[in-house]
Image: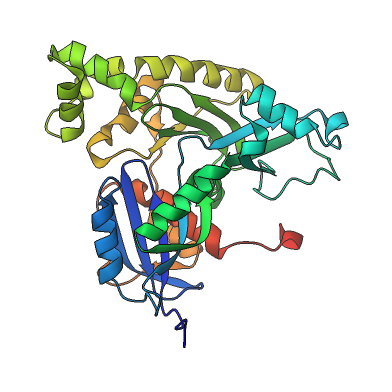
Length: 346
């Protein structure tokens, strides 16, 4: 028998800094999470070792997993369409080239409804707001190859950003919250910023400033001899940077305030919370710093009742530890996988 029946399910989220893995009781819902593991993304050997050691691989030796990825060149952009032009075959390509500054033929892109994540229907064209999501086609191949090298067979490859956005919207609906949330994916060179509510994705904007822009500030503030020394100290978790937090996020904050100001004028609503994902453990304090600089609170996620509502349970002995929020993307990926709703029910 070539393919043994898979007795387990797996879910993997590849972040810039941390890779999170979940082993599940079975490949299909309802799930019991039997193991949670965090491994530095720059240590592929440790990921491969975990795959080799875990049970449930089947005869192929690969773990068959739902995978969330965050390629640097990903596109997640809300856009207002000219409804009169939606049926023009060249229209979307013009948006990609002129608005997003990308070569349309080199990207794989889908148009989604920003309120429910369903596929946008240009034939009906009843709404003018759309969420364009995609990545370079060559990145898809490179990501699949990288996963296979580490012993992970991607049965489903998804932009982790989309799963997280869907998870936050679902969570706000579950909590019956009316308060808009600012979600930040702070990467090395850039930050993806979103304003979300229980009604969906209201604003999305890439900002050309990330963690790398903070390193020269650290060097200057502490009088270090070079940026490499500043970088090592910044990531080391041995120094309390909170006192200089305002200086570190100043550039990013300036960009964010224009987006937030525009949103608040347009909607009459104020941002109530901030949520930062994608940060390495040593930089988790950045979320609180960003929230403080904006004069709001970090979004406090109460995972247990939300997971219960999604029919996801943790096995005895599986704990989330401190800062449960860091698992939110992985569980959102798991939830989007199990709750794929047929089109007629969306």
